[in-house]
Length: 354
Length: 266
Image (cartoon, rainbow over all chains, first blue to last red; front, side, top):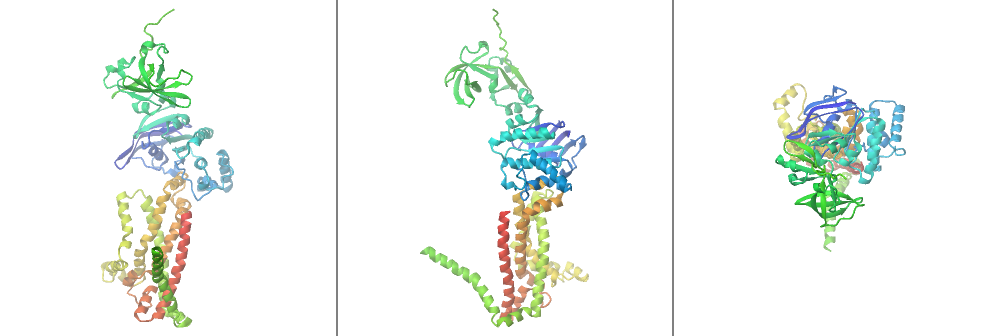
């Protein structure tokens, strides 16, 4: 289903939960609504479902305005954060609910339910009640129940929040596969960027009720359009005095400019290890943390603290070691503008030709 | 030593307060043998009073169940009632708990009595409210109203709206959702509320006495008959009716225990 949202607003009393949000979603895409808790993601999802009425703005499905349609007539499936399974019904009856409402014949219902039971790997659990299932199984029942009436849009509210970390990754992959197989347009809400990046075709970053940026995960990582997005996606450190960094002197020309530097933008080495010596800064190793597959290094450059990672294959550093620090690029922003700046000294000013 | 003393004391108080009156009612009603008991409850005024009580119990329980569940649903779920309005309604529900039943009955007489504008209007239309069955039902309804609402509201709050929302996204409208999703969850709370309402309306005295005028064979209920028998020193008859009421109460108590247990399970 093709979805369009125009200038959507939602107020709860004095609280402006959703501010002027507009976007379009193409048929068959899997979209992640990502942002901090309380940012308005769930409100957007609930308005799409018809469970909440927008204060203003339009919601269009297939180009038709659906604002006044009740949830019963929107052709959507909704997976709730805590699954909201009908607790006095068995797995079979839960999945069959939407079909019974449609007054389908017993055989039709049986066929569809058994197909979904098979698809979601719940075979053998049809006669269990919700409280007899594990978190992962409950989620799959909720998923099957939402899909049973063949909706054209699937909405999932924090689908993995109530599942323990270990199974979560497994379920993520499963859900992505399942949605691809069914080919249904889907939107899910999450506050976990790793989850959004891994599962979604496209991410919409929502903060304080505003849509900050919409794009593919790679796009958003590479090209953040607002300081919020830059800070929210990936790891980063904010540097106030970026003008004093080698290669970023230009930044000082516009006052109030700050920089956001990701660990992967920084290269460190023992003096002499980095070839572009003229672009490096002297730094001191403050702390080292072993992170399983690499070292996380806390550096001190002047008074500024930076964080980077170092391969285990390289020579082991120790706190207090003097290192050269090369900042490849930085995300610069001030009150009016934001842009990505490459280190201007990386192009060696005095190339040596042999 | 001290602890044992307290335990014994508790038992004595319990026995004096609960067991002794029951035993007294039982032996009192059999003071003139089986015949005395049978005669006491087969007097025309006894049969009439028991019938009146039965009618009141059935009508009040039915009305209270329907409107109590409805009000509980509105107070918990309705979005079109402002939170302030909800708080006001919520505290109004408890009014009958705070007001003495006699005062409740008096209010009905003062508003709907034959000497008031509304009461006279109804009387002209041939519909007597005060000193007749409708007034007695109204009075009992007033006294029992909080019972159902207070039983159902917490259950509705606890289960939350999500299951109902899930049903609506699956295409079910409110009536279907109520019976298939909400009802199975609140059912035991409602049954518990019904038992409480029956027990309360069976034993209601003050409000009914004021509203009914206690006219024998006309507006007399079982409890007001017991009162009159005692006034007339007809102790055996009073004990007989009281025993019938007590038997019902014990039955209800057992039902209540059972409902409570089921309520906890589901």
